[in-house]
Length: 255
Ligand code: PLP
Image (cartoon, rainbow, N blue to C red; front, side, top):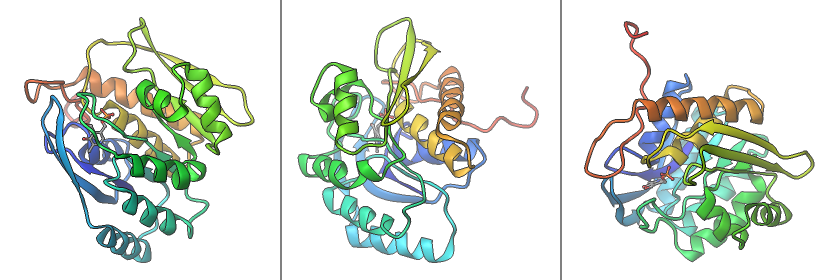
């Protein structure tokens, strides 16, 4: 089950989530949180979906359909976060992956202070993993030192934090998993170069799909990382801004 926003350029948001889950063989249940005005360069505005409509969709779906993981992206507003948190009270064992989307790569806002506060207060402690990029980690953890910021998030109730390094500049992308009671785990991935629209969404949706399939967290992260790298390799220039990862299921006649 996915709660995220619509990016009409098809790069990030719910389309990225749907394509990623589908490519990994998982059927997505997409619930829209907000509609953005956006192209491949930036976000210029966003309107949240009515929170009561979201509540009704969640209840309607849950009454009909088993679901095995929940993934969140941009959440629209604090009211929607509260609706989701109330809904999740009935499902404490379903793994939740929170991609704490705050800003688009181009700098446009996707969350106000109330949404961020609500996400921290009600979703982080329920999440199997929270997946901030470097900018989100610094903002949420109140420090430019990633280790310190992640330690603060863990102390604040997060069970695990996957700090993603895609927006860095090093030779490799370093993704680092911080956990409460276990040693950190780090992955160094090939940096293909450039900035792509919707890679954070792809990674988090891929992790949620793996958890829904019954993988452990580390395996789910590894599967999602392979998925992101593959999608970047087949990225397409949709507009004048960031290329969009090609999250397609290979055709039967393709190698
Ligand atoms: N969700 C929506 C609806 C967005 O518009 C964006 C970015 O523009 C994101 C999430 C985050 O995208 P990324 O995966 O690039 O962090």
